[in-house]
Length: 88
Image (cartoon, rainbow, N blue to C red; front, side):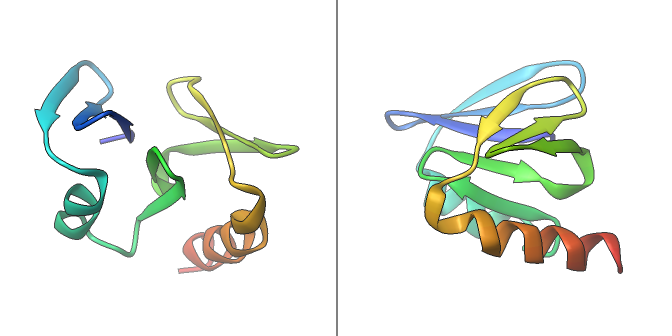
């Protein structure tokens, strides 16, 4: 799983090869994922830290070239979480 994106109550699971749509909430999806490598980037996006290719300004670039914005209030936390993830 590279990322999860919420669209109303539909969650799109993006993998390397396919998209899967599941009728659930982002909160419930996050509870089912290992919290050491997934991070809720903003109100509608969860990313797999292992697939982060880079960070530019307030955007995260994923391994599949998808780009997601970091919530203003989460930018500092994200940098800290990403740094900790890379050092493990």
